[in-house]
Length: 236
Image 1 (cartoon, helix red, strand yellow):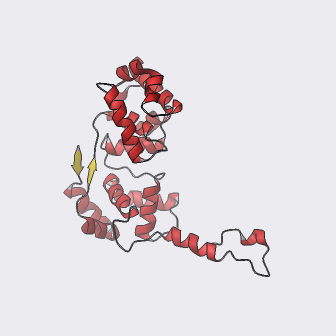
Image 2 (spheres, helix red, strand yellow):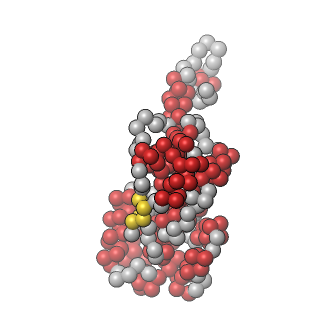
Image 3 (cartoon, helix red, strand yellow):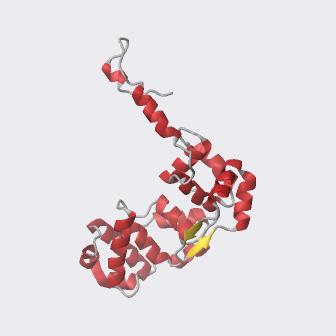
C-alpha cells in the first residue's frame, strides 16, 4: 500500500520550519509504502540486514514463493535449512525462527504492539534477536504508521539534517531540537530528510564531506609537525 503525506502534516511542517518548507514546496507531496502486517515486516527487515535492497527483495521473493503466507506457523514448518536455501545466512535464519517461535508460543504478543506507546514498541521489538532500535523505528513508520518518529541512528536522517541546516555533525542536542520542532509529524519530516540525503534537492551538499576533504588537505606535515601528528584529522 502507498500512502501520501497529508495536507495537514505538510502545512504544519511548512509553518514550523522555513527550510523544510522550501524542500516540501520543491518536491511536492511524497508517498511512502506501508505494510499492515507486522510479522512479515519484521522478517523482511531481518532478511535485509547488511545487504542491498535489491538482494533483500530477491531473498524475500524466494521466501514468499516457498510458503503460502509468511507467518510463524509456515516459517517454523519450513525450518532452518529451507530458510538458508532462499539465500539468507545461518544467523538470520536463527533470528527468524526464534521470532516465529516466540510468536507461536505466545511469548511475544505481536498484536499488543499496535496499542503500545512508541518507546514501548521499540523496547519490545529490540528484545528480539536480530532486531535493534533502528529496525523498530522503521517498523513504527512503515508498518504501525506512527506519525512522530525521527531516527537518530539513521544515517540518511543524519545526512539530511546536515545538508538542510548546514551542520558538520548532528549531535543528540541538535537532533532533539529538530525532533521537537517537527513534532507531532516527525515521520513526515523523515521522508523529506531522506529525499534531501538522496540528492533530490539540487545545490544542497553535505558539509561533513567538505570538512573531511578540507581536513585531508591540511594533513600535510610541516617542519613543526611530526608524521604522526600530521596524520591526525585537522578540525576546521
